[in-house]
Image (cartoon, rainbow, N blue to C red; front, top):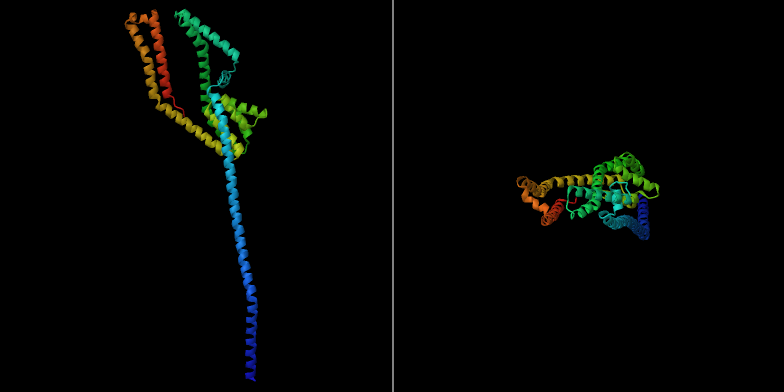
Length: 337
């Protein structure tokens, strides 16, 4: 009975194994296909992920290229505008020079003042006893030279005062923008609180904005009334930031630091060139000192230069050559920073 039960049990086990083997044989292909499908699905998912990463990278590169091209186009356009403005800034008309000097004088009134100045100097020269040949030169110098020199002097002094205060104004704008104020309010703050001539220049920006001109366009017009490179830098920074975006406070902070470094460099160049300036002053004053000493020792020796026509001609030629030498030395000592 036990033998029969063992045979039946072995037969059942063998039949089970046989059925499992037959089932595995039939299902092997399906299981293999499912595994391959799973692998293909993972491969597709990985490929899709890689494609999305590549696409995102390509999109970022494209956006960066577009932004870079936009900045380059803006810089090119601003450079062309700046070249046309520089030609007008280097040789501005008289009306623009009067505005840049901060003088509220019309052209007609300036010409009247120039004629009065020329006539006054001519009368003074005639009373002193200057030769008749010198009087036309005195008239031209008094009518054309001296008034325009005064305008140039006022213009240079105003630019210097602007450069001394402009970095402080930029720092105030940076702090205002970082604290949350818009650029318009920061510009109005400078227009109301800063000293002259920075106050007048930013007041023009506020007035232009009230007339419908945007702040970038108004800042680009600042070099028309303030002929310096620093004003052009400020307009270019505002224009680029408005077109390409970016951190305005950081850009203005960098500009303020650059302007302070330029100021330090100018002071260093001026200190290094003081020796050459002193030498030029001594060389320029030496003929007058020698002539004065000779006149004290023997006046009759120099009087023919003033009493005769040949002496006047010699003095005129000497004055021309000395003026040329002084201008050459001045050109050699002036460095653009």
